[in-house]
Length: 287
Image (tube, rainbow, N blue to C red):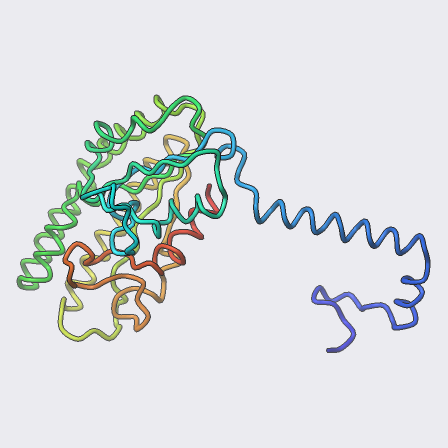
């Protein structure tokens, strides 16, 4: 301690502080200022964004949005495996929007969102989140191939996915995003991306080769780039979770993702920590 505040401004001397405390007007000013700062802080921490507070929040998308891999599944969601530990459910619990509905479902593709999830939206919806596109690009088949087959088979399958992401997925995302705009015209829409799965140069026993890991990461980068571009063109926000998952990929020693595991549906999905510390902060900043 050196007599300076965290901002670098010197603090009043003990005598000066004593004088401030004794002076009735100064005490009143300080009390009013303290009350104001407490009120502002409370409002910042506890209040939901106005859009969600007035119109409600709807979560759409695939297993990453549903929370597969995080546990705590809602038994009524069946095969969709919606989790109370998913980033949408955690955000809703923290900010208490006027209503919350998660229509996200494990295995969902863009067509599934359009045909089966948009009924949760309305003209009054204030906030929408969506994570989708990975299944369109063949996420499950790609990771199965890379886990069980040769390096060359893995790279070939990844290259097929990357071609789909570049050439076909943009129009599929436009279809989804246009439908969201139509069904929830007043909503703020936040499109959440996917993390790179592997830390290159990290330590992993068994599993994919370094070349296969690099190929999978490159496909994730392609997916995020296409998704971010389509989101921006529709006026939507994009949440890049690589900012929070950095250092917590598989092979990092502190992974927030499951590797190949049982139950198999958890494989290559965020853990509860990945949802709460990887996805939630990014979504909260963008919502």
